[in-house]
Length: 59
Image (cartoon, rainbow, N blue to C red):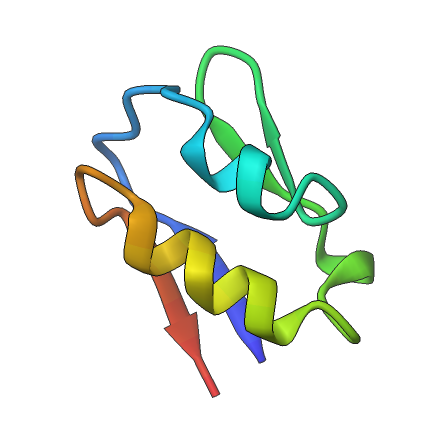
């Protein structure tokens, strides 16, 4: 699985609240690629919860 944050992140922290191991939010969200494995379900939940739909997942 590949995870990418597109332009338009509002740094609301929703993704980090669902999966703090993978998403880190400061000015914008970033992805910790090394931690995706084993957290796939939480990553999908985070993507679904993003209010501006900028989290893109490639299987």
